[in-house]
Image (cartoon, rainbow over all chains, first blue to last red; front, side, top):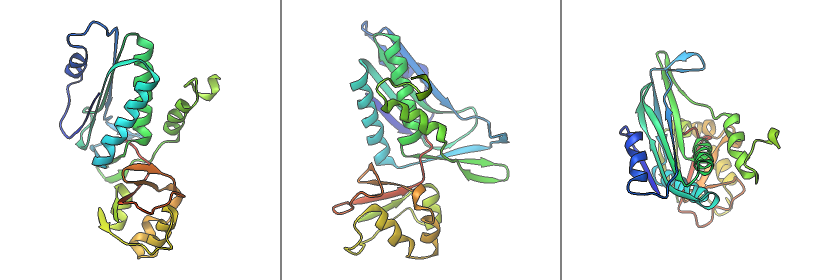
Length: 159
Length: 83
C-alpha cells in the first residue's frame, strides 16, 4: 500500500507502472484520476485550494485501503491526494488498484473514491474572479459512500 | 486538550488550534460544542448549527454523543469535500 499526501503534481502513468513492475500475478490495473474542472455550477473557476488535516488524513486513508484489502483480493493499492492550490486542468487525486481480475480492481477503486469524497479530512475552497467559497458536501456523494455499507455494494434502487 | 479547527470552522473562530481545559461537566463532543459556542461571537458563529459540524477525537471520526474524557486532540470541521 502506498499513500502520499503532497502539494506537488503526480504522474499517474508512472505510479501505475510502479505498482505492477516485475509482477505476473496482476491481471488488471485500474487508474482513477480526479481533475480540477474549470467551472463549478456554471461559474468560472480561477483555482481550488485543498485544506487537509495532515495526521488524520493519512491514517483515515490507510484505514479505508485496509478495508478495501479485506473486501477484495487486491495485489496493490496506491492513493495520492494533493493539497494546496490547484488550477483547472491539474490533477487532484489518484487511486490505482491492482488485482488478478478486473471486477475487483474496478470495485475497489470506486469504493476508495467514494470514501475519499466523504470521509477523508480534506476541504475544497474554490476561487472565482469575485471571491472564494467553501465547497458544500453533496448528499449524492454521501449516498454513494453509504451504498458500500450494504453487502451487495449496489445502490438501493438496484436491489 | 488540544482543539483543532479546519476550513470554515477555522476561519470563523479565527485560529487553527488552541489548548483548552473544559470543565468536568462537559462530557461529550456535543457538550463541548455547546460550551465552546458560549466563548464569544466567533465561536457562536462557528457552532451556530452544530448538526453540520463533524468531529474527530485523536484523529478518528466520532459522533456527537461520544465521550471526550481522555482525549488528547479534538478536531472540529465541516463535512469533508475531498477526492
